[in-house]
Image 1 (cartoon, rainbow, N blue to C red):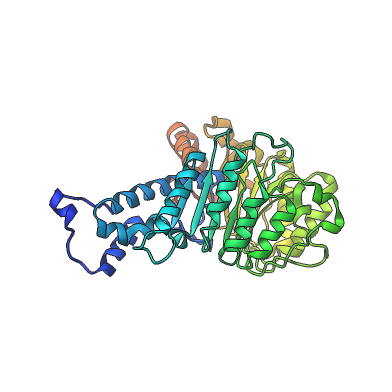
Image 2: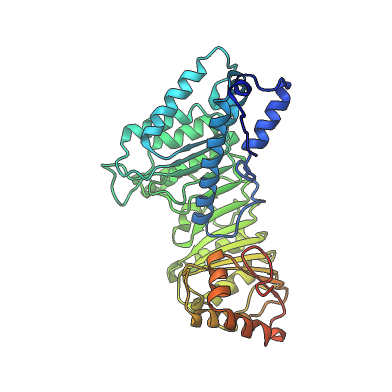
Length: 426
């Protein structure tokens, strides 16, 4: 929605609509579908870094619209300020300082009945500056304490100057600010792209304080001295609302409860994991998947091993995830899908993503060999997820595409779709 101001008079004297109508207009003008959602219904099948990149682009565009609206006139400023603060995006340490000043100034204004942070539902801190200081993290903690109703928190934080390159621990003050200020309202916590991460005990404190947490993306905890002491190790709480979790099999121990036979994720429906399991952890990982993922309906698998090991992952999911319907696999290239791959029998949708954007013809040929021989009793659709791969196949390898799909259609009983869900050969 675009708001156009024809002249100075209109800007000073907008049409005399009731405030409720203006608020509805502002809401429609600034809304981004899924921006404040935490139920996972609008989530993309693309790799998480690409999804976040797109979300942040939409966030920035929405913020520009909001800032323009509140500058139109005093009435619009009063009515629309709460929309400006619904989502907060921080990209530079200097932004922390200015945000804190703005919050402090607005909170003391007589025209506002509540602190501006009251309206904030989403916080994205994406600082790429390597010169972030300890004082910046202290300031961030103070800012978080002004957001009592946060639902979504995304953190991507750089190293502290004196931080050990192995520990990479997110300061405890930041985690405790979340624990003490917005635990009950927190639905999504994501630090999967952050260099700094909570230590395990701090993370346990956070998820214990957040009983309504629905999405947790913290696959790696920062090591800490406290983790070495079994007596100081906090147990994993039973997370009755957690529907989606991102893990790495080699760091699974951070999420294992004291009682190894207990399922602490009874509501889990989506599992995202990086597949790098060394042999000594195979049994532990398999037991966890069998115990906690029986009701999982969606799995996103980031596979970076040799092609012949992918079938082993399919066998594990077949054995442990009887409710699995949607399977998404991220691979380095199309050559990592072997022929005669057998999918879990319950899978009806397979999403495939190659990290090699511009693949040569023989990579695509290997892909179609795999698709012609793939086995899945309920498989209805295979989707190539990245637009670049689809475009490259259609524009640069059209003859190969036509020969593979036109001449051997009888060998493929499922739809092969492009990134938008349309037939690849429309």
